[in-house]
Image 1 (cartoon, one colour):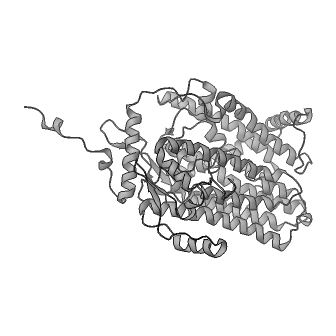
Image 2 (cartoon, rainbow, N blue to C red):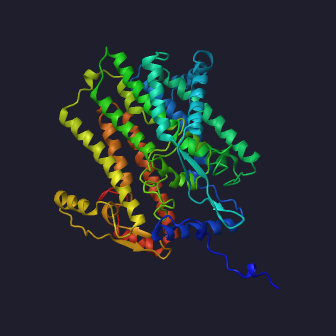
Image 3 (spheres, rainbow, N blue to C red):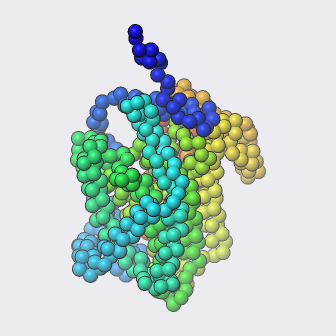
Length: 519
């Protein structure tokens, strides 16, 4: 007699997951699971190393990006005050050699301090209590169930605790000077750069030891940069999740505070209003990230990207935004509100603090800006942040209920009053052949990446607060725009492959990528 169990038709994998979300999210989950099944059935085929210009581009980034940060440090220090210097002189390369030698011979105390800081953040990530959340599906187990990893969300508590301990160390116990980070900026940069390479090598070794190495190509340099493993873990500690949000973002805020103190020290207790405004908005930006920490679990970084030197050393700001076909699978009302800053231990803290670093070197008396100018810059920062938040909220709520777009009526009213643009208050979307719906109402009916547009606007405000005496502060916005253009075009190619003619219809309706009538 045949085993009746063999005749039973196997249920879809998504049926084995609690249906804690509505049919729209459930439908998207089925699409995601189907893609996972296809990936599981494929053999591990090496793909062509063509991201970031392939092997030559990756090699140039591994060498050039540290040199770029050393160059900015060279321009901001050595009594240059932010004036651009010629990078092709012997003096610049002698400077690079000197700062490395000084870390070993003079400022060697920086090495254990930075290591202790990172280990402290690791301890907080492991020991602090927090909600345990399952991430999105990352594979399929042998029994047909969906494989998902668990994450402890304690970033906001760790962030507040770090700020509290920093205050105690620098202002109450006076163990370190409040200007310690500013005074040792270059030595910290050198040490962080070296540590990032050591950590990347360690992760590569770990992936081989765990037999979980997943080479992208046959090229060692390319795979070292892009990563060998998607979810490196040791004793349930997730390295990628840790370095995505910590410790770089916290160090960014601490650097800003230290640069305020440095300006006060340099100029007889005086400080500029500009440096306070920039620090306030950037602190809001980071605080918002930790408050909505769960959102990172549904970003491309955590779901798909492998963990290599790129994610340890640097990470694009909002580069890994959600693709249109990827919404939410976790049934929580907060999980895609936040898709902005991604942390690391080098690029974010040492480059994103460039505005406050620059202002700390110049007298507040020559940084006095007209009140109207300050108001305009502040409005840019506020409007950019709100635009980013509203765009993500609209996409978020639409992913749960396609008949509702958050604040659509109010948004359309503002368009009508300010610009004379009339929009329908009923959500409009394209039902694709694959299942997901492409929204083109509200923010998403004007440009394809309105959340990135908001980030650009607030970043312009940060740069404008540095006035126009030097070019250095504006390298940040140039970097940001180039990153966003690269990411938008990369996402566009992915969506073209996945949605075909439906994506063509969508791009005909929403023609502008980032800025209406501009790009």
